[in-house]
Length: 170
Image (cartoon, rainbow, N blue to C red; front, side):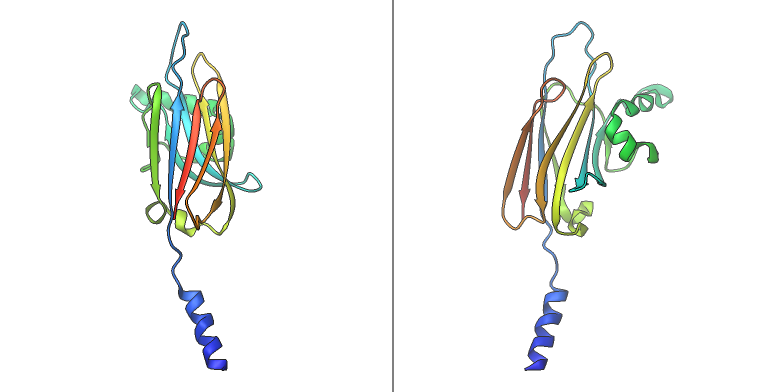
């Protein structure tokens, strides 16, 4: 009997964690303003205590000469305080160009991005946008990790961000 329990315990400890996929849809609204600039947007994960866990994506003006676009990254204040000031931009697999108004989809494979190494628990997807000569907005979308079944969560922005949808697939 004792051998059976040891075997079961060993099997449970060596069973691989199934990596889930995390998909995000974000809407950048079309604003009617005199001087429009595409927003800088940061996507990251926080734990239940709002502690920084992982950067997913940062959209900014990567093509400005002399890395001029990097000086505006600090306008995404929460992201900057939690992670941004520690990074040397651009970050491979994280940095990207700003996006035009419309709906955009980001997909993160759990195994490829290291999400599969997150401990089980409650998390939040955080999306922060800031626009030159514009406003700033931050949205949090709670979720549980790892996904044992398909999950969907949504939040609605008010001005700089539109609808944010999070979909988890086991």
